[in-house]
Image 1 (tube, rainbow, N blue to C red):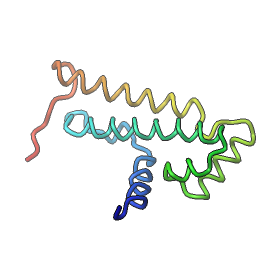
Image 2 (cartoon, rainbow, N blue to C red; image 1 turned 135 degrees about the vertical axis):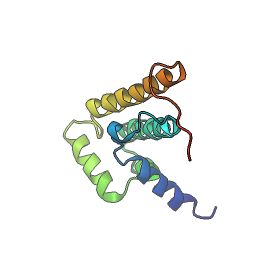
Image 3 (cartoon, one colour; image 1 turned 45 degrees about the vertical axis):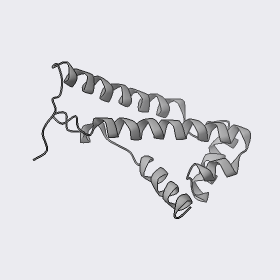
Length: 119
C-alpha cells in the first residue's frame, strides 16, 4: 500500500496537535464537524495509548503513530503509576468536543453560530 504507514503516521501526528477552541470561528459552522472529528480521533488515540501502556504493547503505540521519544515519555509516566494521558486531559478534550457540538446544535436551531457561505 503506497505511503500507507507514513501517511497514517502523518495523519495521527496532525490530530495530536492542540486545537484551540478560540481558533474556531463561531460564525462559521462549515468546519466545526471537521474539528469535532479531529478531536474525537485524538481522544480515541489517547485512550488506545493508555490501554497499550497497561498491556505493554509498544508495537501498538507505534501503530498509533507515536515516535520512539514520545513512547519513552509515555512509558516513564506509566512507570510512575500515572496514565500516559491523564484523566483531566481526556476530560478537557471531551468538554471541548461537547462545546463544539453545542455550538453546532445552536447554529442548526438558530440560537448559536450560523452557517457562513464561502465566497
